[in-house]
Length: 192
Image: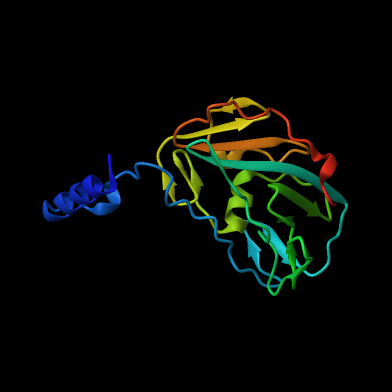
């Protein structure tokens, strides 16, 4: 369906008492990756944003987002309080606080750092990110959502996926990619 045809459908539904919000987005053209603003001491879904990192637990997870098979960068600065201190390559090295779940760059590597051994979920990452996540919904996209964890399809609620060390989580919005995403991510090039 072309955009002009979709606009006619929305106008028709509106004039019939239907709500435009009920119209399903035909593709992920409106994916929103904006990062929520956090401040020191703020707690989002049991994840605090603190000045000091206390690395009793420091694990890494890779998250990839594909929009009709095309990679959408996971932004730097998820879970980092502004202002940010970024290095020339965009790596965020400092902030007013760091949530126990955060990103430093756009590689999709998520850092989970907490003072205790604790389990965290993809739902908590999305809460800290300030973005919706549910069955058939992610990043302002509503429609076909396929989630792969280490190459295997995950069929339960995506927010329940554990953030396990060296996991590779892929969210496919809309059409699947022409080439299946790799089951594993190479963490060897990660900065820290």
